Length: 402
Image (cartoon, rainbow, N blue to C red; front, side, top):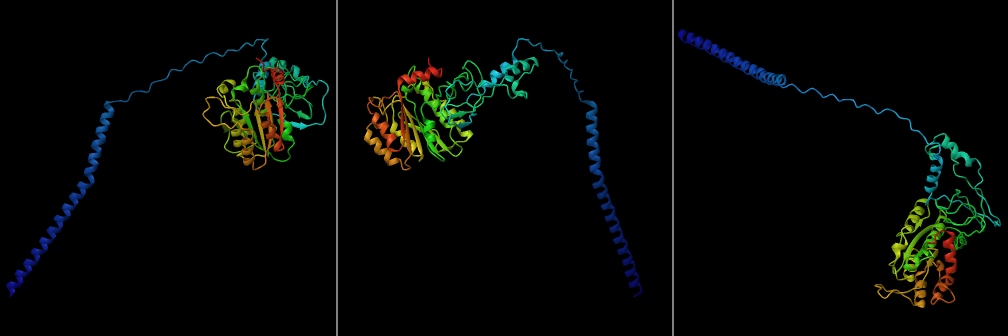
């Protein structure tokens, strides 16, 4: 029994010593792994950095190149020619820049001028350009001398007064032709002695309507409108421009150009604001004698139908011919007067007044002139005929003759 107990005690001590050895061995192994885990990556990184440093020390970067400063050119003083009219040249540029600008202020006046009126009554402006030249001012528009060009006073002419600016000259520059003496020429003519404004009567006719107006202008662009000497096309375009610029802010407008077919400028009526008026002026400048020389047919019905589709209150028709068809026409053009009137009655749902301008058409002798007369009279409109003699006279007055 005693021996058994002694053996059991000896085995217990051995097991205890063996357990301690295992635990100690485990701790040693864990410490070895921990040390290897912590220090091995650092050694690799240090080797890589050492390698990088070694490479950098061997391959030095190139030194930056120094830019050579460029010598600046010496300052030079420009010598001005004492005879050089700097400000006068600027005045000419300012006059030229007014082309196709909207700067008309129209007023009604019951007075009719019976004597010539001189509108350039600003004596200071006579020597301002010379003063600016002596001061060596390069650009008149950059200075505060806003009265470079003479400002006219009130100029009457058959009830229409214009506050536009005119510059004394030979009539070859600027938007308003003429020298400001007799009012001849210009987009609106008018002013001065002869009072030849609104030669086609469009402005006077539209003034008869009170309140806002929806106006559609139908412009004939057939080849006959550019007949030599008469200048029917520029006369019609200038008259349209004058009328458009006279519309009020509450009015609306559109343009229908026609020959064998009719094409509106816009798919809808346009408010008569500054932006749209400039757009119309630019659109009308597209029609030149060269561009219309191949337009041989006159389709008046197509033009009026296109205009009435916008349901306007007024239609203005400018044409130099009656409905006609060329032998090679590829579209049907109605030439029967009664059929045209019937179609117009059907489409004129708004009972629009029709104002007709007949260029080089004798209302008594021309065949088919009855159509134009009926279009005007049936809807409370008017017709104005301009014969060949008047066309030649207008072309000469406006400086349009060849």
